[in-house]
Amino acid sequence: MTLKVIGAGFGRTGTDSMREALDILGLGPCHHMYEVNAHDEQKRLWRALVQGAQPEWDQLFAGYRSCVDWPSAYYWKELAEFYPEAKVVLTCRAPEDWWQSFEKTIVQGIRMSNDPESLGLALVRDKVFGGAS
Image (tube, rainbow, N blue to C red):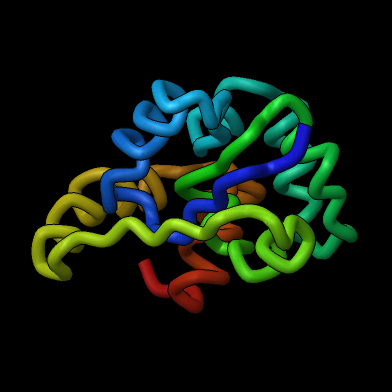
């Protein structure tokens, strides 16, 4: 199985709705941050990638036909190069609305995290936002 759709939108831009839509349209299962949080092996593989391991895209997306949200949205360019036949979809939201939602959810999770290897810290806070929280 190979990725057919790559989501490039940040979390809180409708990625869960897009995940559901892709599943309904037969382009699932769709990888979302939910998958990372639900599966220890996913968490291990993504953490290793964020810490500098070589990407093993086929292993990370084994069994998935699409991906949205973090962590994959951060790597959308690399994924588009690796899966050249995949369509790239950008979900977006008005900046003010996005920030309010992001601040109430993801920022709170980052601030409360006590796991130094957390993807919220290592990827979202440090790589996407340059360490700002």
